[in-house]
Each structure stands twice: as structure tokens, then as C-alpha cells.
Amino acid sequence: MLEVNIKRALPGFTLDISLTVNEEIVSILGPSGSGKTMTLFCIAGLVRPDAGLIKLNNRIIYSSADQIFIAPRNRKIGFVFQNYALFPHLTVAENIAYGLAGQPKPTVSKKVAELLEVINIPALKDRYPAELSSGQQQRVALARAIAPEPEALLLDEPFSALDTYRKERMEYELLSLYRYYRGDILFVTHDLEQGFKLGKQIAVYDNGKIVQYADKYTVISNPVNRTAARLSGFKNLIEGRVVACSVDEATVFIPEFEQTLMVNFPKSLKLNTDQPVIIGIRPEHLTAVSQPKHNSVGCRLDRKVRGVTTLHSYYYALADQQNRYSLECLDPQTFLDHQDHLQDTCYIHFNPQHLVIIPLD
Amino acid sequence: MLEPFIMPLSVSIKTVLAATVITFFLGIAAARWMVDYKGRFSSLIDVLFLLPIVLPPTVIGFGLLLLFGSRGPLGKLLALFDTTIIFSWPATVVTAVIVAFPLMYMTARGGFEQVDPNLENAARTLGAGEWRLFWTVTLPLSWPTVMAATVLAFTRALGEFGATLMLAGNLPGRTTTLPVAIYFRLQAGQMHEALVLTLVVFIFALASLALLAYWKAQARRNGRGQ
Image 1 (tube, rainbow over the protein chains, first blue to last red):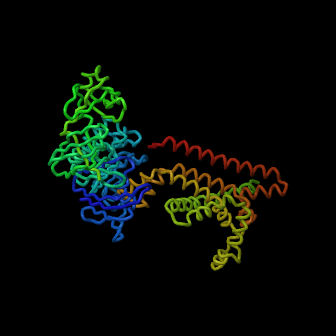
Image 2: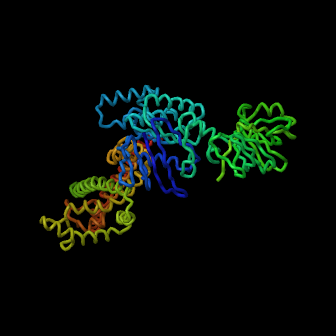
């Protein structure tokens, strides 16, 4: 179990987080420059926090109160760097063996052979890192990090340099490595899909703070603020004000739409009349209809935003000629069906069950 | 007949080899230490280390005379052991080390600072102490630069004249190095001898540069880079 509670002043903001990892994979999700990497560096002991306490399996590895700072080499924490940081002058086998210094030779070679099998590149053991593909470098970096059997493993955006296909394979391999390596894994990413696929818990970072730390399904379905909502895929965020609410249903007035929307919300959420809120909806949950109906707003198709295949196209639909608001919608079928007359006006329907409501303070 | 040429050559070789070995270790130690040292005197120490490059050799020689003279602090210390280095062979080594040191220090430090800090961080998280990571990561990765630094130090030590003359004097067979011998041959009007000695130095320097080029090519060939 890894317990982290640290403060560290950084240019522009202060990192101030508290986080517990209990033998699972936790994803740290956040925009660049929100302190994700700094958190890992502090945990590994490569950067000294200003204050706080870090415990790994009840062993204190940093405590400002007791003036304890265990050197990185004694922390038993594995680290996979963003650029892999493989030793360019050592072979694959020598890289993996680096953390096994001091162990008897037969043990080291057995362990290295075993890990080469696990990462599936036994034939490349005498190659140098520059002779490997980035996917292979990645696997060597992972194998090297877990070779000394660390109690926690930290990964800093490990897949950011890979293309989509390799990324997916590596994600799969990381999960299979996890079966080989039992310990806490803390994993930094700015990619929601990846964080969701790999993590069990997700910690959402913003400006040096954790804005939400919860089970990944909770993070996906109930973001707590604007940043969490944006990071978890709610591309459409609309400001409004509650005009009426029951136990699990609210009527929210949206000034931009000059009309109200019905929103369902979990019973645990407390809402008051007149409360300012943000309404969020994912692009894939917006549907276009040709006739106005309940909970819909008038739009015209503005432009295709990105994507070459029909399945992954995003469309912007702007509500009226004044461009007062824009919505992002992923619904190729609807648009293909209505392509011609959508130049005029269509209606975007908001399903109350797919809307999330985030109270503003 | 060859003796007048062999004597300064052998003095120079001995001096330069001893000075290069000493400078190599001193320079690397100082560079390694300064990379990490973040104290408030760091720029002052840096300036002090680099001072011999900008000072005229005669100033260095004069300073060393004051330091090692019978009234100087180091002179008094050596007097306790009934010895002095002024006008003796060790003086040629001392002056050569002093003038060659800044080149070794400056170049090696640049090499150490160019190593990706995350490689050193990776070694740390893999259980390496600072000593092990220096020998297994930092030094091997900056080896071509360290070698270039060594050749620079070597050639500078070979060319040292002014400070050597002031501290070690001109005692043939003991302190007369090649540059000093050339000067005194010219003074004595022995043009031919001076010319031969000049050629010897020339070949020596050229060989060093060839070695440097060879190491550079070698480093590029082995350059597994990242």
C-alpha cells in the first residue's frame, strides 16, 4: 500500500495532493502541467517535496515532520520514464540486470532470461536500445523496472511515444505484466481512454490538486467539476441555473438556449433552486432529429471537425445564425440521413439520462 | 650526438605523462563534484578553477614562486620534510598540472552535464548509489568528451613554457623541457638544433590531434545514442 500526502511549490502553482494506492492500478489523469509527473518524482525520491508524508507498505520513505528522506535507491520503487531512459551503452540484458547488482550471477541471468520471456523478446537480449523499436524499448524499460521486484511501480506517460496500434498492444502487455508483478502501480496519462482501460481507480488532477479520486466508473459518469468533466469526455459543457428540482430530476434554464432542459441526476446529489450548474453531455449521446421534440434545441450543421472515416467523424452543430453556442456531436448516421436539409435547421435532442449536472459553488 | 635532443624529449615525456595522469583524476573529481555542488561559493570556485586559462604564464609562475618559495606557505611545509620543489623536476609537473587542469575540468564537466538526467535518475531508482551510477552511467556516456579533455590537457601540458621556466628553471636533463630547450637554443644562436626540437614538438602535437580525431570517430561509430 502506497500512501502519499505531499506539498511542493512549483512555478505557477502548488502541488498539494493526498492519495492512497492499495495493490491496484491507479491512473493519474490530468492536463499537461498539472503536477502529475512531479508527483511521481516526489514518490520515487528524485525530487524532495516541501512537506508531507509518504509511506510504502507502512515503511516511512519520506516525512517532513520526522525529517526522514530515504534515498531513491533504497525506496524499492520502480520507475518507467516517459522517454524510457534505457542506458544506451548497455545491451537489453545488461539494462534489465542493472537493478539486480549484488545478486549472485546465476540468479541474475535466470531472472533476466525469465523477464525476457515475459516481455516476449528473448532473441533481442544482446541488442542495444537504439536498435530496438519504441515498443520494444518500452517493454525493456518495464522489465528493467520490475526486475528488482519493487514494492510500487510508477509509470510516467509510458505510451505517449507509440502509435495507436502499438499503444493498444502495450496496454494489453502492461496488464499481462501486472499478473507477473504484484504491487501498487501508479500510472500517469493525459488520455482518458487509456486511464480508464488500465486503471481501477482514477485520480483527476487539475492545477496541482486532485479534484476527484474515485472508481473509474464513477469518474466517467459523475465528474465533480469542469476539468474532471472535460477530461472524462464531456465535450459539451453548458452553463445554466436550476429553476425547479425533485429528488432526481431537475429543470435547468440555459441562457444560451433561451429555454430549459430536463436533467436526471443521482439521488446522492443535493441541488437547490436557483443554483448555478454546468450541464455536460458526451458528443456520442447527442442525436439530431428533424422535428422539434421535448428537450431539444434548434441547430444547423456547421462543419465537420475531424476524422476521415464516417465512424469517427465529429461534427459541430451551431444552434442558430448568431453562433451563440456550439455543440460537438458524434452521430454519423443521423447526419448522413439528414445531410441535405440539415443545412437549414435540425433539432439536437438531449436525453435527460445522459446529461450530467455539476453544481457550481 | 643525439643526446641534446633526447634529454629535453625525455624530460618532456616524463613531465607530460605525470601531469596528464594527475590532471585526469583531479579534473574529473573536480568536475563531478561541481556538477552537484549548489552551494553559494559555486561560481567563485568555478572562476578559481578556470583562472589559469586567463592568467599569463608568468603571473602563474610568479604566484607559484611565492607559494613554494622558502617564505611561502607550501615552501615552509615542504621545508619540514627537508625538501623543496623549486628548480627541480617536480616543479615542471606542478606547473603543467596547473595550466592543464582548467581544460580538463571545463571539458569533462560539460560532458557530465550533457548526460540525460533521467538516465541517472533511472539508475537511482534501480538501486545504484551516486558512486556506482557515476562509474556505470555518467562516465561511460561522457567517455568521448573525457578523452577529448585528456588530449587537450596533454597538449597544454606539453606546450607549457613561461611558468615552467620561472618555477623549474633550465637545468638540462632535469628541468629543461622541449619548449624551454627551444628557447635557449635560439638564444644561443643554435638555429639547427632549435629547428630539430621544434619538429619534434610539432610531430608530438600532430600525433595527439590524430589520436583525438581517432577517438572522436570511434565515439561516433560506437555512438548508440538514444
